[in-house]
Length: 362
Image 1 (cartoon, rainbow, N blue to C red):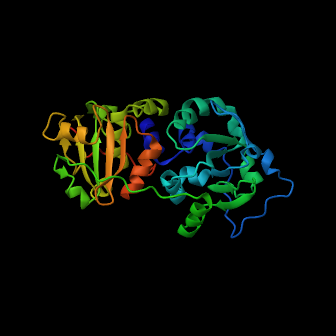
Image 2 (cartoon, rainbow, N blue to C red):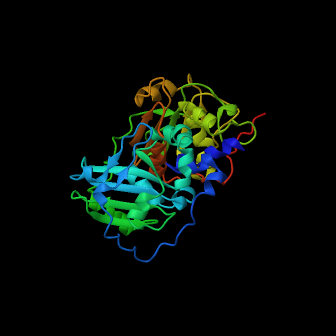
Image 3 (cartoon, rainbow, N blue to C red):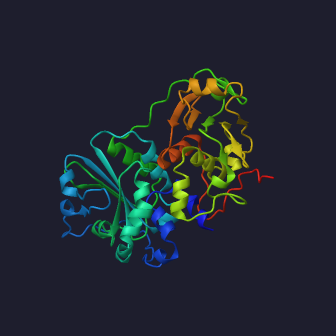
């Protein structure tokens, strides 16, 4: 079904291109190569300073030689990372880490040369809308020039780090284990975020600040009533539309939050967390999490305590009741991925099926 194409958006960056273009695009991608035990050396004739990310959409061209004086991270997304979840640990770390100012990061989609004929469609309908959703700038490398230049196996996540002199400081293909991830963090001077402040006093829907010191909690605030028919990815009465129409739906802050809870975070994952939804729902619910009306006891006080106002928003309490995340308005995908990481939630992957939204409605 058309709406099903949105199921993986929250889990991917440039990989959304493949989902939107469908089987025709997949036929253009070369076979995935095996990752060797040791990467082959970069060819001597390759001039790294002259390698370039070409201008596309609103993004200016980037010549790697012009970035000397900075540490440069290239996350090159191949077929396996776009479709199979390869590189989950590094993606989570790159969303979570606090980076020094001299570190620049680019997310690069490795695409076959033949896909360039769909360049305008890719930019307009898929990559363009994703730019505001991801932490790092997105480019598409038609023809895989960077994969070839850095001698990386085709089809996999490729990681390249250049030091301040423009020399290769790290090169890796595929998933990173914990040791390699620690090496990367040290190389970049990355730091884990500092613990947030203790949660203010609140009590709403059976949750309070004392209880959330004992378990992780999530408070979700809706800015309007959300009907089941508005939520992409739900069975039996959820929104049905093409990729672009589904993007437009989840650009509505409260619809995006409702979709996250009903279609992306499964019941078993949510059961680990104390949660409450403050707002109005029509035809859907979140199993185990009470739905609290906007005028119910404690609702307005919770909004005031977390300074949410009348907007949509999400507050994540972790690490003994500390405010690990407090977002208002339209929450970008990368911060939703960060919330899942903080809470230890594994969002559903594309292909696992639509969410049921628990309440099938009358």
